[in-house]
Length: 200
Image (cartoon, rainbow, N blue to C red; front, side):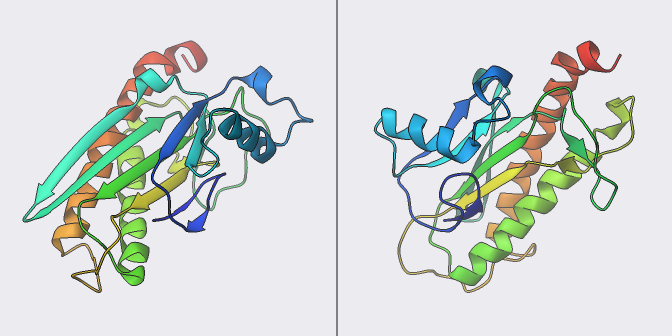
């Protein structure tokens, strides 16, 4: 698998990917998030797992699946947008509380190293398009993601059938569709649940 997250960033291997729901009082300014997460995983016997942290209620996760040809891509995401940013824009000075988009996408067949790099870029594109297409629900400036988004793309071990996985391939199309659908649904739900309390 390939991703960036607090636990197991980069190319790595794991049989479990977990979400840890946190609240503002779990992570005061003097607590290191990586150390906090490592302790929580260890206490649950999950030291070898890849992991995300989210302030979004985990029960508010969204799941989407797409089948293109013989490829099945499945995406699970939690979407929180209070930490929203526009790529390339000046950084916000302060947010009311942490919010992030945590995305796991699994593809049904092995991928080469190069194909993993391609599909994580497709997952990022799909997430970004989904967020941009829900900006009309915001009262503030538009955003393209959050400052703390994390993505993991996972595939089974084995001999890769394809060396590439661009937008035009079954893998690329399936991953893009699954991530877009799950993220769009998650963003719509966040605006319905949270934004009225914070922005309106």
